[in-house]
Amino acid sequence: MGCGSSSGTPALGCSCPTCVSDNPKNRRTRCSAYIRIDELGLLIDTGPDLRQQALREGLTRVDAVLYTHPHADHLNGIDDLRAFCYVKRGPIDLLGNSFTMDNIRARFGYGLMPASPSWDKPVLVPHDVEGPLSFSGLKLTPIPLKHGHWPCSGWRIGDMAWLTDVSDIPEESLALLDGVRLLFLDCLRDTPYFSHLSFAQALDWAARIGAQRTVLIHMTHELEFTALSARCPAGVEVGFDGLQLDFNVNF
Image (cartoon, rainbow, N blue to C red; front, side, top):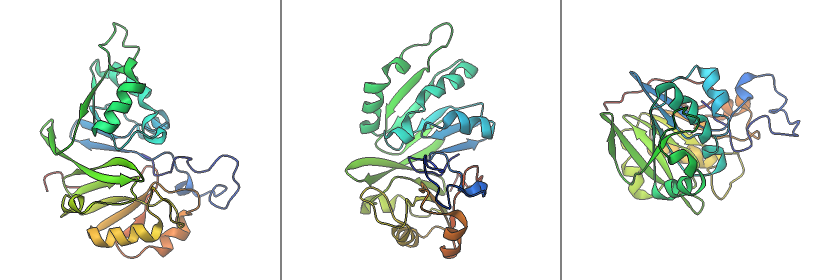
């Protein structure tokens, strides 16, 4: 859906080469993903660009949202879930760690109430998730991560893992990534940052995890698509908005 950082690219007021580029792969909305398995539709995060992303990709169904953490660029599009509730005439499950779910309960309580006859608000059901679970017969595994001082969740489904907003991966979480073949990995910029991976750090973690294919996500405008692609080693590539990939859910 999106592979940009909290500011998106182009960044407001910026005229750097990436922001003025005519390469569509340098236009990045806020970081999120949509996972389709048969008729099931799952979102990872609801950033402020959700409506735009959903229209671009033709999305009409969301059964659950897998949240990573409650920063605005990953959460504040939550109200746009009301359109999906309206279409299905049913609630949407929210899955995430207790830190994230408590934040949603405190800030978006109006969306956690029973449906009205007009379905004019989102109808959401939060679930605190601290370990692997089954959703509609699908195994979902949250991956505990460090995002600066915040506890963030990556997500693994089959042989795919989505790790955004990462500054460190605890040793016990690495074991949950054994056998991952498709890895989406945080890569904010070249310069180190306290709550994200730099390009060099992302390459180090990619090598350590050992996925066959690693896609870099959550990038600022400091990273230009073509130039960064030329610096990537074999097995690592630069993500872009609208990228579609297949993975094995039964791994």
